[in-house]
Length: 251
Image (cartoon, rainbow, N blue to C red; front, top):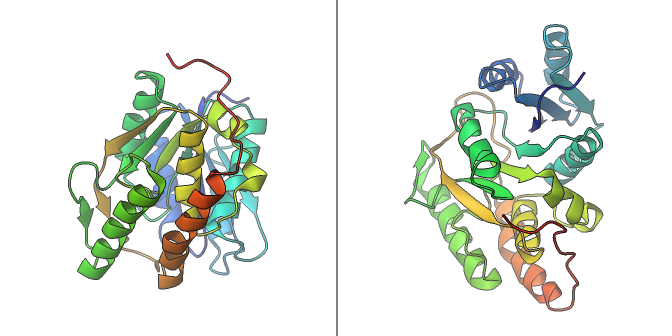
């Protein structure tokens, strides 16, 4: 029987070095958090580790296995739909590699549950540049990409590509998930932009992003290219698109 009101969705591909530790760390933050792992056919046995831990956490740990690398965006869409069906009130995005600190989960949760925001973002840039152990070139690329997105889209969000996010269920029920087109990090921009256009309240919560210590990064120049060039299409399409509006009134 489901007791938690929140689900943390963690996409994985070859995360055997991190997956058990991140699962235990998330569960250590409180009984309100369940976990859904979306594994894209990791050949290193990540899914097997998760399934082994399900005996220890039978009602809190869930996994969906997919065949092959189908993209970050499609992994989250799969997870969102599952979480909506299970009636979780708060749905999180989080990486498996500890670049997103589980200690920050309660802060994002409180910003939604106590402060009344619809989307809360673990932001690297809302209070300066809070990134540890990234090469300077990558920091600059990410930081200026977010500035560029703000200029093009008009989003008043400092960290538009952030992947540490909490959504209230109504947000994901309102957004037409099957119409989200991007699969890489532009997916993160598109989700935030769409939530904004639908009238939802968004807050950035400052966090410190620490580059992974174990495993291999999935980041590439092509992913950032999608984010940079995709926002132009995202903005121009918005001139002709009808966005569904939230059903409830902001508190």
